[in-house]
Image 1: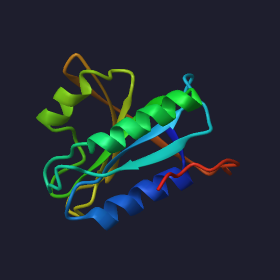
Image 2: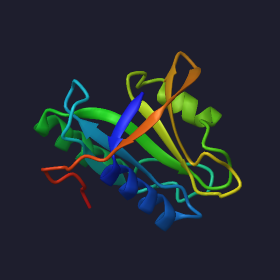
Image 3: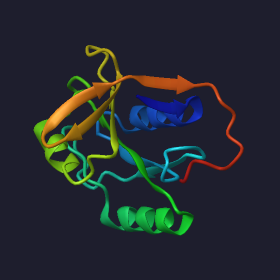
Length: 146
């Protein structure tokens, strides 16, 4: 199960809506035991594609350095699907191989495909959907980079 604060989810949905018809992407960082505070790190999609995303290398380097400095780890990798269901593609599954401990959140921006917010665990090429819980909690620390 993936539980995220409503403010984080709302920011991810807004990013996906603003990027449409291109895919958006980013990271949600947390402390190693997956407890708050969470930090949203929107990334630029270097691919600039409606069907594929790729973290911009400088954004990725900055994100990893920032997480290392804060003692954080990636909790969630997220991206949007703009013309298909919110289910991992073959390339999504291949890219997830290096991070089996990370949740993979996909936002569907095409209203033909519901539900529009789905999370998966991907390990050894196997995809397992997990529930997404959106929690109404107050965040006491800054959480969105921009």
